[in-house]
Amino acid sequence: MTPEQLAEVLGEPPVPEGTWEREAVYISAAALRRGVPPASLAARVSGEVLDNGFLRIVVDVPGTLVDSVEPLDVPEDPWPDFPRTWANPGFVVRYAHARAAAVQRWARDLGVPAEPFHPELLADPRDRAVLRLLAELPGRRLSRSPGWEPYLVRLATAYHDAHELAPAVPMGDDPPAPVHTARVRLAAAVLKVLPGPERL
Image (tube, rainbow, N blue to C red; front, side, top):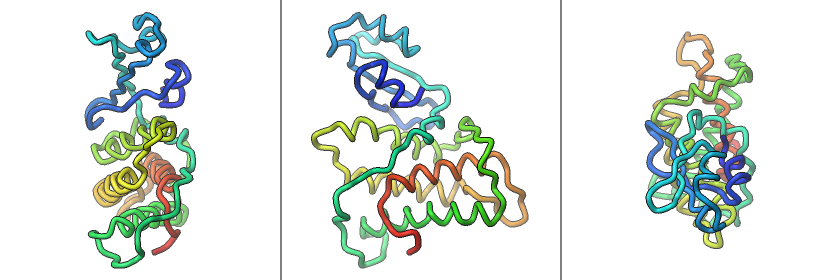
């Protein structure tokens, strides 16, 4: 289930927990807040009830959430354009946006097919780190203090790692593979969230 689907059942977005490197876990206090038996909600989301009444929900294929990511309308970019170094959070965020945009162009040029999308192939720890941060979006959108600036830097940093160490396009003479299709889709989700130019 995607965060949005879980939120529909729970009545509020669940909170992603841990790194998601091996297991995609959400925690929710929805049953306690709504005053309903935790077991009834747990059964609807295939979760378990913890001793404190919270629900623990494991998602088998977290990659399914990429298609539910909606564009983020954040306040105006707060960072200066220069210096264009890793010490400038604005550069980190804008460059990640530009890299995600470049992936879309390269994928078209290299013939990476848009379909079929196999979300289960987003299994590399770097892919999972990006998914873990994207899973925060529904909850942050509803928060009175969403903390967009540090969140965007964290997402951009995770995406830089994925871009460099889990490439979204074939390298050298390698042909396109299904994992490339999945990673191009992940880059498209990141592109919707991070502000920045198409080229930098």
